[in-house]
Length: 359
Ligand code: NAD
Ligand code: DAU
Image 1 (cartoon, protein in one colour):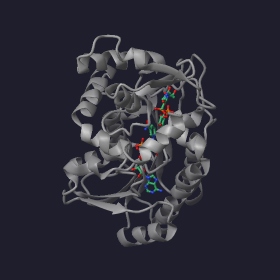
Image 2 (cartoon, helix red, strand yellow):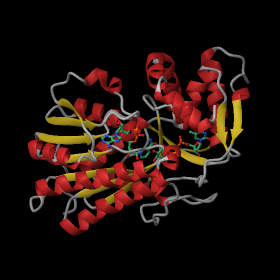
Image 3 (cartoon, protein in one colour):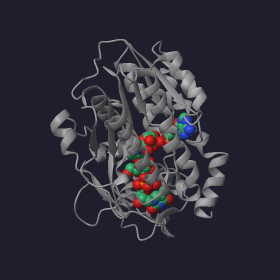
Image 4 (spheres, helix red, strand yellow):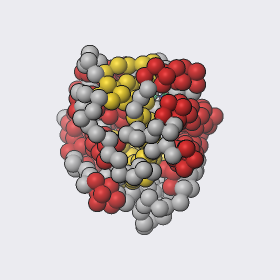
């Protein structure tokens, strides 16, 4: 079962779920542009996090179709697979924000666990006994490994130890993907990636939230003492890794993806403040004065750090963009796309913000 590369020269129907979201939109664009012989179907429910504006530049390409639908709607998903017989699935659709999972864990179980199982079932029904050249690719997170102390890295052998409802739901869906591989012989790959940043990132996550707040001179709510560490990766480098793993990864394997780029939140926030002051022509120190320490996130994981040696050695992947370049491009994108930012921060976003930050 191992080593059966997915051939790029063949006509294939690929289903990408969650393609209107942050990472998904970069993956859809890459696949639509790089593989004209593929038919790319983007299935997305367009929740608060899904936005077709993210894909305006490719929406009329002949090898691209958008399907609005919910991965938890089993009859709909079964019919979709029956109609299209997708050769490959790249599954990104999920509830993705840890803070929201603390408010509403059931929504995360429904989408991330049940939704994944419904897709697995439909893929199994379509191809069981005829798996050659087929692949189910689950996009997962480093948060399934839990929290590190001050030293050490997550490897592919690190035991799962999730702490938030979000990471528990992603861990569970990973287990189901593996179980379908073991039980039914379904060819799968899983990648566990660190924190992404870049264009089109919904401003509920640290970097885009703080960029938006700096633009609007609003407080920058740092959780706890700010001494939490994350490993940041530019989103397009994640999309490149996903392309590589989808085509060249070994079946029934997991690959960790990371940026070799650890930052304590408070250091990252101060860097962002300096860069933004510079871009906005504000006096140095202006944005730093917006930093406000707020109540900590419950169950806050201290540190994530990825050992990405396996994907580097086996598939030759490494990040192509330095953090300085990536942050610079990201800030420029938000400053150039004020309309996008205004569009996603009106309406329901205001209610979420009030609830989360007691604003
Ligand atoms: P996102 O929240 O920006 O996008 C999620 C997308 O899924 C949205 O377009 C949304 O409309 C869609 N969606 C949600 N529920 C759905 C449903 N029931 N049916 C169909 N579509 C639905 O998320 P993201 O940050 O782009 O993350 C994408 C994937 O990558 C997730 O699986 C996440 O766990 C994983 N991941 C994210 C990061 C990160 O730093 N953002 C890092 C590692 C892994
Ligand atoms: O590690 C991969 C994960 O990264 C993905 O699986 C998740 O989908 C993605 O949301 C992200 O999770 P985090 O919880 O690490 O990201 P977030 O941007 O929410 O928070 C980053 C750090 O910043 C974390 O330590 C919490 C802190 N933080 C976050 C927010 C939103 C703050 O201090 N203040 C804030 O307002």
